[in-house]
Length: 212
Image 1 (spheres, rainbow, N blue to C red):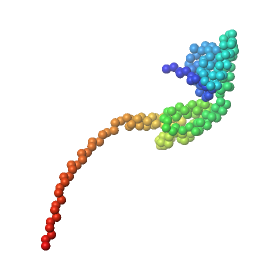
Image 2: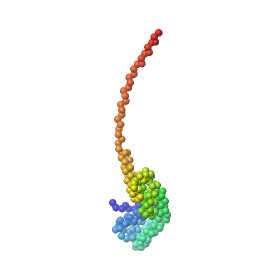
Image 3: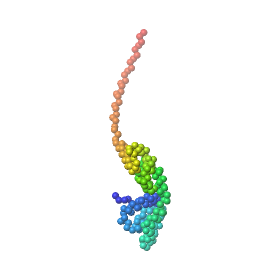
Image 4: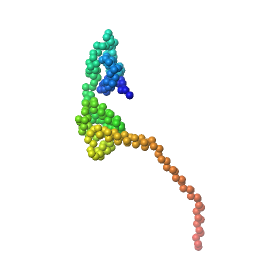
């Protein structure tokens, strides 16, 4: 399957949109042979909110240019820097850092938790391999307590982030599969025991007269 096209951009979470755009353009280089083709592609996904207003101005520049925008918006690099300056949160790395510290697994699967964890690390500019112990300490507070306990029981001690991710994801997946199996399995029926036959009503003996 090919790379999905970017989501529509409304002016928020520029970093996620930028990552989607870069990945799509990198995989589909032949579809965008010129700077203008790449610029128009990006503008076509700015359909909401402040991003739409900004993109409309750029589209009008192209339409009003006799050369169809070949020079009105500059090079791709110039356009991208202008786009980035307009919408990138100046505190995005600090915000990602704060979100990473507050991240908890909760009721989600470990696999989903790690997807979010890696996304925040990328935004915060962290290299997990060079800061391994810091990230393992974060995992001890963020993952379900039961998963952490299972990893801490392992001998020899698990000392890499990759191993923590592998082991906890596998354990959590197995537990999830077991829960689903137990939920879907039919419960055994217990045969009802027949009630004992009723005791027949017998007349009470008449009292005997007392001897005089």
